[in-house]
Length: 329
Image 1 (cartoon, rainbow, N blue to C red):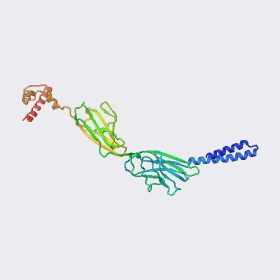
Image 2: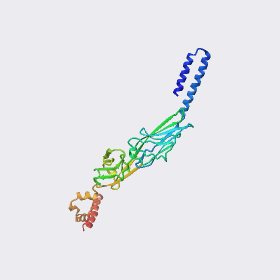
Image 3: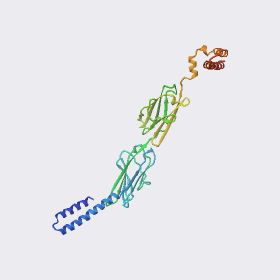
Image 4: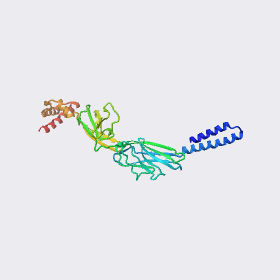
């Protein structure tokens, strides 16, 4: 296109230096032809490659076979080449005019195992991908001459090392009085990248910190020998009645890594608050708990006229006396 511009400028120069009207007319017509041809070529260039789309998985497992796709519309123009790059290093090329049309290239520091038997114009297949292949993948499409218009698109792929088990939950106390704090830790080892840990109480997700719940930032530890990571999340719960259903709190942590892994750990915390019988036992004296004391109240209640409120109290101790007589036999 630069040559056409130079020729057009040359024609304009001739027009400026022309001495006769006829020469001016001839040269202006020539300039118009060059101008129109340049505009036509520009319009052809801008429309020769459209609807380009790249399909690269967001995350895959270590050892997976992965297919990368590159789709496009050349609008009738022939394809010159397709090239694939990993972090700007070319590792695959497809040129229809060459024989064979496909070719794989080594890249620095990593091994990209291209399955040429299954790769072609729109697809490139990678076998047994390793974590080191995490990176940016670019597809570059070039239309055939004379313009060789080129477009490219890039997408990121993460290769994941998955853990071999479920997360672990550590609770210091599984029984607690309402109003006391509970500290819980959830950890997952042997992954790369780190897992995302989410907390649930009675199957309801704990989304934000509140006056009663504090979720601390997830800590990450590196195992240098295995080059794998451990994720640790801690939560502190200041218990109240709403945390317990029939005296039990169900606490759960979910660990996820993209859509490739989900593990769960669950445990129960029981309400250990003093019950009514315990309160009575700690406040009544031994003489009051003596069955004889209850019997005396029952006898006196039958021979006296009391108000309804006093009668209710007497009835309670009568019943308590009967229960104690059975228990203490």
